[in-house]
Image (tube, rainbow, N blue to C red; front, side, top):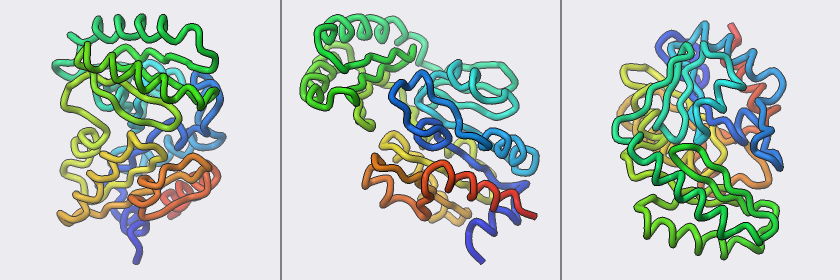
Length: 252
């Protein structure tokens, strides 16, 4: 019996956890236009009625997720700094005091990249993502600017797909959220596609070593990082493959 079947048999005591961008949503040129692929939200709602926990864990702000997903799902934003359920949002202790630092950093990096085509600065309230997807030649410039900002502000640099992030130095990441949501469960699945998901994938691996049913899923694309692929127990072909996987978890 494979681990997916074990999760299905223990649905009432298992957690199904999903990244958003590149996982539920295909990667799009303008990240603000990202939406969950057809059929996935309906399946998540159906899974939520059967499984112990169904949650979306994202680097996006919770407000972004709330505009695209039903509030019956548990939503975790900004790498575990925000969470929401039933329309009520909470902020992790120690995070709010960094909001002004992040805002100042957004202003600085926006000003310093204003003359370079193809760079997009995405402010997230408690983090910043600087995208160079539309101008890969600007990667060196972006990394230099972000490194300087990290030195002067205390923010922490993290790599992502064709972008670089600055996050606040609060002890939380997607792995933290996985451990919290899986506490007391019999099984956990995490579906991912980016470097920011590696702590979550590692958390699932560690929980499995401790005796829990654990399944790591990578959603394939031309941009899937090698490290994410290597950490996955199962690689599915894009959002169509993820849709098929959810149907397996819903099967009776």
